Length: 584
Image 1 (tube, rainbow, N blue to C red):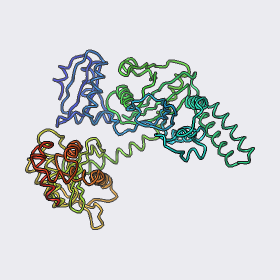
Image 2 (image 1 turned 30 degrees about the horizontal axis):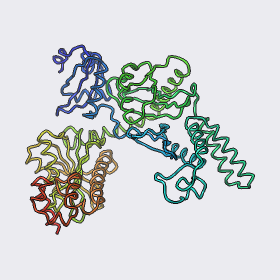
Image 3 (image 1 turned 60 degrees about the horizontal axis):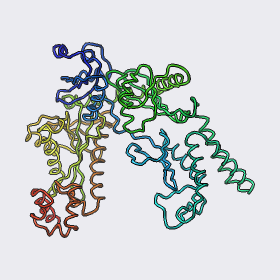
Image 4 (image 1 turned 60 degrees about the vertical axis):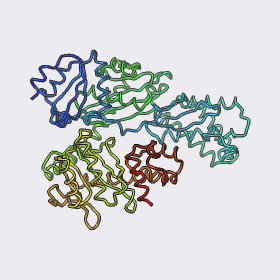
């Protein structure tokens, strides 16, 4: 199929893009030798997810670069731009928590996330794969040391001062020497040296016991035990100056199990694990994961990777030292990370395969019902308040997996007063964009309802001359989804214990939740914001401009079209005036 095109591909480095029948980029890769890599997809033996990718490739394109590093930079740029479904997507992953010790005159100790966007230069310790561990550490240190607890100093003593957990920074003259000692001991502890704190706690425990305050003494004893257990669980690597992240992986059946060891001040501070279904070359997928990982996390001074990885290209891309350990404790730790990755994959691969099988079986069942291929599904629902303030929501699922970055919200014209007209408007707006090539064409549309809703949706598609499969999900008298209504109005009963029922219900619940949450979001902005933002063409920016110019809803109502047009396009100004009159 691609023999003639492959013959023209040069043996040079570059990035390649696989496209499906609709022209969508479904995979982006890079190669030292484009010809050899692309040829491997169509002439070599492929399995698992790669086999599925190849079955969907309609054509491919490539961009030649001067070096492999340039091809990697281009690959990551294109992945971020297009979010291809067969590349590793980490958008929904949360960043790890860190402990922040501020550099204020009177410092605060707290747990923070999203450290990549922080603009200050405070001390950060972590990452903590377990947020509970980070919070417990901060809570313990705040109880031992009377640090400032208020983000903004208050005018009078707070509760923490009265229970002895604050020095009263708002009113008292603080002993700066004592504060410096506290800061040194806390910093030492966060860097892995617990000796100062253990001595302090043991002294406090004896003091409380001598004063017959056995409840307090028991509390200190528990803190000491917790710290000792934590220290016991940490593996000593080398000396106290070592701060790095160590990555290794194990792969099987197109599953990639990754382990990250966070080594701070010479101890194994924590670890992260991730299991992914990858496509193409395993080393390439692993490098891609590391690069995307540091889009959320702070880069350490050094990274360790196994010898199967090109450490030089990764180092040049991330601009940090990337080493491959050859012997000694670091090599043992690298082997330990691979062993842990293997164990994690063995534990989860049966579950992953079972879930994958259930999902694929449900997709096949749906494809038989609708008589065509089903990969991309778009589902719609509306929300309103007593017949007013209609909004629409659209969710997108690819192979029954949600694509949350492609969900869409719709503000509906103020004149719309019923569900069918709301659905008509939303569907027309969405699929007019598909017709114009501004949005992806789905394989299947799902609407909430029976024959009437399916007929309305079919009319919109027919008016746009779009051939897209369509079903409605009809509920029974107990308000549970029970029947699929096909495009030609055939009714198919759903087995409420079957796999297809489970996935369709999940989609239905998700779109309902999404539409309602958008409606609440608009209402929660306040009555004036709700009224203004219900008008198509008025978003947050224009709402603020209206309020800046007219200062109140009363003055907006009294304004002429000409006055409103100083802020809004004339057609939007007309819509706003019309809407405000209808509301009255």
